[in-house]
Amino acid sequence: MMCIIIILFVMLTIAAVTDLLFDKVYNEWVLIGVTCGLAGALCNNGAEGLLWALISMTAPVILLYPLFVIGGLGAGDIKLLAAAGCFLPVKETITCLGIAFLIGAVLSLLKMAAEGNFLQRIQYLLSYILDVFKSGEWKLYEQDMQAAFPDRRRRNEGKIHFSLPILLSVAIYKGGVF
Image 1 (cartoon, rainbow, N blue to C red):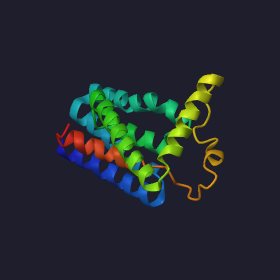
Image 2 (cartoon, helix red, strand yellow):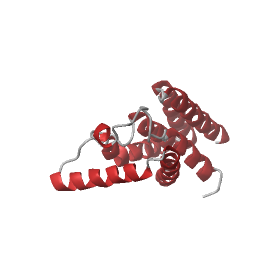
Image 3 (spheres, rainbow, N blue to C red):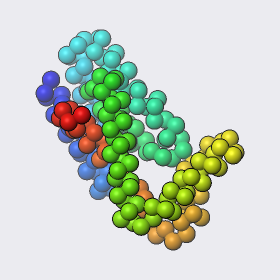
């Protein structure tokens, strides 16, 4: 069992490092993680374990799909959470997802403070929410970002790499902090 957890942490760590360095979560690492997680579930608990791993893997995809559709979360992040789900029961997967969002919120606030655009970004968020309610239709979150931030020079300004909160959430949960 400890071997499976080590594989999970190696997969998440490599994904976070490549995301931070190259702005990409590589599908190969996710596929290796999914394969190891499903194989571990099958070996440890047979067909029932495999079924629960598949359910746990599917939960983040279903829950996060709306955020993907509006551009609030990347496909790599969702695939990474799904892969982590292969190693964790459904309840733990959803708990880690919640912790990751809390960590992501803190990192986002810190980044906005460092970039000095907190008020601009909150104003844009509120404007986006109001626009969605008025129109009754979803749109890409950053669709009007250039107009809202005309002096935005860097492509990644305001963006956090969600793979890091995913790694930290699993480490916190599996480490017994939460």
